[in-house]
Image (tube, rainbow, N blue to C red; front, side, top):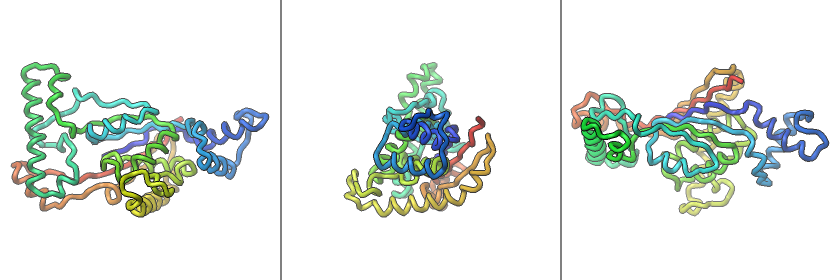
Amino acid sequence: MEVTILDYPVNGEETLAKCGMATTTSSPPTEYDIEQKEIEKFIETGRSMELSSVFDFPQIIYQVKDVSRSFTHQHVRHRMAAHMQQSMRYVEIDPSLEKEPFFVIPPSIIEKGKQSVLGYIKSQINSAKQYKSLINKELPSEDARFSLPIGTKTFLSTAMNVESLLHYFNVRSCYDSQWEIRTNSYALIAGCKLIYPNIFNKCGPHCIRGKCKGRGNGKCREKAINLLKDIEKRVNKKRNKFNRLKPGEKIKFDLTDLLGYQADPELEKEIAHELDIEKINLDRKVNLEIKKPEN
């Protein structure tokens, strides 16, 4: 999974606070001066009072790549956002697996061992062969794609304001959430904490504020808190470098050790041998990239 924050208002926290605080003054935001401490205090007050309209202002645009259509079907349910997704007609489908697999392999299947992995991969290959067969018979790609599995990889771009993102993190960082969308949620949390530290300093699943809304009855709370602490440490290590970025420059995170999955190399060799291919990568890498806006 690759998560890239493409664009956001650089002075989003300042603008948000100016617009909000100006409502109780005689001056409009353009004539209102504000200090950093006032920004921090206003955002903290806005969060505690749940002033949602305040956080509707800054918008973040991001891209998520190498995810399944199972993920995107869940992701686009968040309607207070705009989504643009790769058409399935343009996905590169290769049954030979000479490149990276065209489908996502859930870690839970890998954990079940060789036979489960082989059975899953072969079912994906059979679907791909059927798809190719239909295309060769000159069936329109919009109809041939009906034969492709929900695990087929795709990418999409999303625009969300910070209020929508805060809600996304509340529900999708919960350990009740499907692993793929939960991974995306925590990767985005890392990025959002870097660009807007005051807005997102206390974000995460409901349970960290003492209100479990999942099926775990609070049992996952410590796990979520510890993961957020690890993410915070990773973000703080990058903060100075991020603050020195020039417009158009990028900063990258490898979050695989926190959010991804690393398969047993011996299992990968066995699977590759059974499929008669040179190698196969069963790892689930998680990378985050942030591009500093140019304007």
